[in-house]
Length: 63
Image (cartoon, helix red, strand yellow):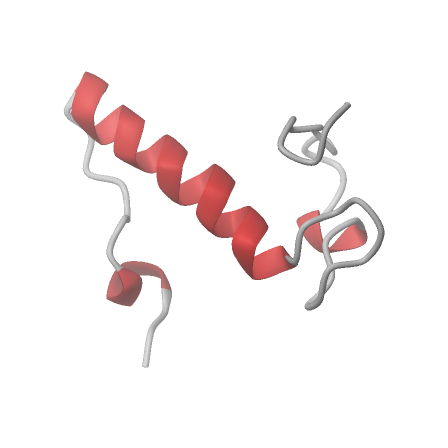
């Protein structure tokens, strides 16, 4: 497995179990993991399925 291959923790496990605020071992930092997984997936679903999932900063990062 390379650093860019995703591994899945499953629904029963929090992302922060493996991903911390700073890079730790092979896991990317939590913020980057969210941006790589969540945002890119939302962008694909919005494009392919016509969904309206959050992709802009303010949609997830509330002031």
